[in-house]
Amino acid sequence: MSRGTTIAVRALGPYGGSAPGYRLTTFLIDGETALDAGCLTDALPLAAQRRVRRVVLTHAHFDHIASLPLLCDNLYGQSRPLEVLAPPPVLSTLSRDVFNGRVWPDFTRLPSRAHPTVLMRPLAEGKPVRVGSLTVTPFSVRHTVPAYGYIVSKRGRSVLFSGDTRPTDRLWVEARRAKNLKAIFLELSFADTQEPLARAAGHFTPRLLARELSKAPPRVPIYLYHMKPPSLARIRREVAVLEEPRVKLLDSERSFRF
Image 1 (cartoon, rainbow, N blue to C red):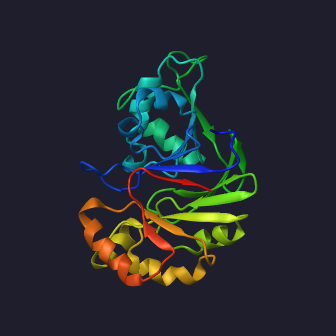
Image 2 (tube, rainbow, N blue to C red):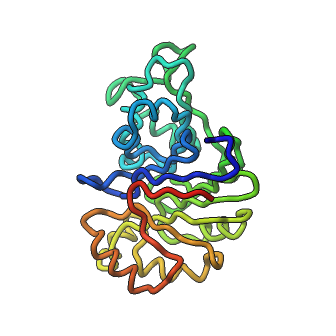
């Protein structure tokens, strides 16, 4: 799949909270690259988990890494390490607070230093890096911890993932700069009545999105993800009121080929 000419995106989990039927944020790209790791072990059978070669992380909040420690457990002892890619602030949080031998085993040293289960690979902000058949470019966004969006490119086409962010001009600068941009996957977490919470927590609401749409490249579809399940019904109504045909809410298991 990874050798194809298109970018295949599968939204395993488009939600920013967990409940039956609501999977945490995870996108699977070309079957072997995960963007965030909220629900990999919930969504994929073991055989498909073994095909995941790398996880690219937007930030280290729990809803974006929840299944990563469990995935490492399932991949223990395989011949090649799982690559975990992110800018250094994200990787250092993982090493200090998750893979520390207390919260979870340090799989960067197991089964041995020479043959680890996990290989941490730092990414430089703004620098394109080849990962499999894709090129990923991180850019910083505005959240409560170091957080990054990504341009994911392949053979002359691109897709943008915002990661968790409050409104920021940087996001739209990168969107307009991306070559042959096919789609924007944009976080939106709370309803308009929760705007003070959204601003404090570094997230979008429908009203905040409406103020940003003039900055977006024209005619590029925008797919919303990271909705909090308790707010979802109200978010749906508020997004419908925008009457913006290029803006749609994602559901679990929605697949795309760009």
